[in-house]
Length: 297
Image 1: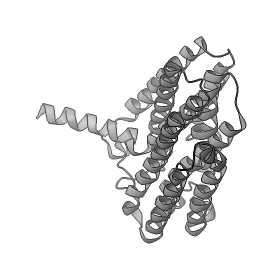
Image 2 (image 1 turned 90 degrees about the horizontal axis):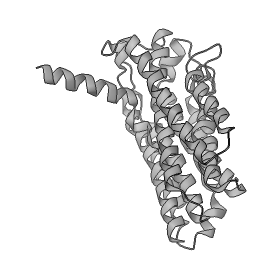
Image 3 (image 1 turned 60 degrees about the vertical axis):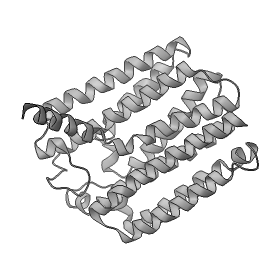
């Protein structure tokens, strides 16, 4: 009995990490490593540290989002999305707040190790990431409550991790890498679009103005497609440079995106949860195949 309770408690914390969204943070670093491999400047220790920072920062952000949304009264028991342990009473608010800052602290400490390879101003990047983790859900102007969640994802899961992971290894940022960072960021934004599309009615009821609430379901569905097409277009030159076979990868990505979009138009509520995970996994597969292509080019 005691063992079952312990496993149940562990399960609540694992669910709070929102594992189906973690491919978003992994994909950015994997894509950056692909560029570093292709340009012959990869440092696997730096890559591993960047990956650890990205994943820890995302877990901390997920914890913070759950804690601060609970404190603001924005979550209700029995929500359509994944079960939230604090709202359902499985995790105490104090424990979730402590976990948020403990994991964020671990991300910051891991990031400090990167100063062995990078300049001092990386500390400022780390501060920006730490502030972003909290500012997404709380503060005087919570980004996720004012239609800026997708913009935050574009920067913190695309532009910043891809460019910084590459920069620490190469000492510079190239135009193709920057375009790739925007591409990955747009794919990550699509994961949040599915999340907010699912929750748009509940969010509207409690005054949480996500992009889906502001623009409406039909428009954000179109935005999902626009983001995906733009993401592929931004990296078209890079895929062509990798060889005649590899452009099949963006074609497969678009095919998968079209299938998810079709399901997005048909499903409602909790039935959308698998589509969120599928969007995140498709993004990670895209990044992994890019790394594979770069390694074999």
